[in-house]
Amino acid sequence: MSTLTAPAAATARPAVSPPGRTRAGALRAGRSAVGIIAQAAATLLIASFVTFALGALSGSDPAAVALGDMATPEDVARLNHEFGLDRPLLVRYIDWLTSAAVGDLGRSWFTGIPVADSVAAAFPVSLSIALGATVVATIAGGATGILAAVRRGTWIDRAITGVNAALATIPAFVAGIVLILIFGFAVPILPVGGYVPPEVSVFAWLTCLVLPSIALSLDAASDLSRQLRTSLVGALGQNYIVGATVHGLSGARIVWGHALPNALGPAVATLGLHVPRLVGGAVITEAVFGMPGLGQLARQSAVSGDVPVVQGVLLVSVVLVVVSGVVVNLVLARVSTTDRSAA
Image (cartoon, rainbow, N blue to C red; front, side):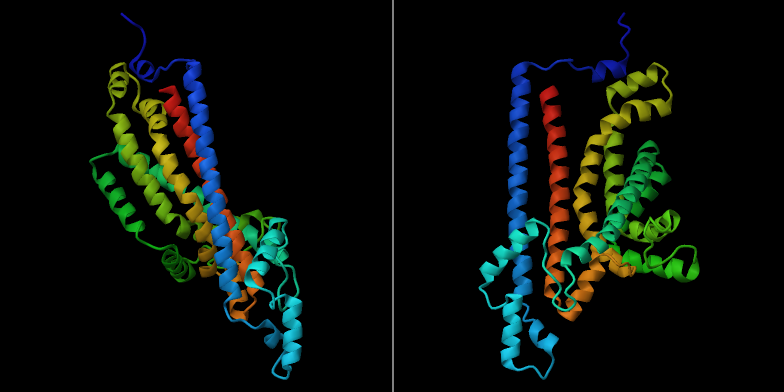
């Protein structure tokens, strides 16, 4: 009788793939990577033009605002020439894009501060919220998905499924407002606004990120939980799991050592697809909690009509979303190609 256990037999694969299959897999991976990068470049180019055009066509007259009501038309024309606003739109866009490519986003019309400096000061806030939301979604979604799968068919499974369905419909800004009401009045144990840099106090930095991260993570956590439950239930029904049970393996070892590794692929893909949304959603969430990130910078600049700052913030936000999407898609394409090559 063979001594190979059921889990080992079910997951065993050839140690070395045939050369032809390896080359085919590498070719598919290369084509996929080129396609993903080309699509991202086109998206970024279109988004940058729309961003610049909306600001350029907004009707804002910075010269008139800066000079006041007593300015003569000649003074306004002179200052508009200094700002470069008397040049054709396409010429201004090309100059702006080429300068942005080397880190020069222009200067504020009203303060003269480089836009890149303002964005650099606000960027860590938005990034901290996005990373915090990713961590919360991974922990909460992973834990509830595994629990629902292990307790499938019970009231725990039904409760988690119901909560996930409800959380998926709540926008981040609505969740943020609810959390502010709860922790600002009913249970005032966490800060409901403001931001403390980690170099000042790591503990204060972490506590001020708790509520924004939770508000932003709800949709991703619910999707991750549902996908992980579905994948894990399917894995637990495979023949090798039955064989592992017959051989006397403990339930924890079966779940963590055999079923979960085979169920993680779709769950990781689901979380990866949410990463660009978390990056973009951080800009909105921080505004709800009054945090000095990119969202607040864009809002204040829009109110004052400081178009270069608004354009710079939007461009950086678009780049973050596109780049995170490219990284996620490249990882998923690599995993998919590896699975096909090894099959």
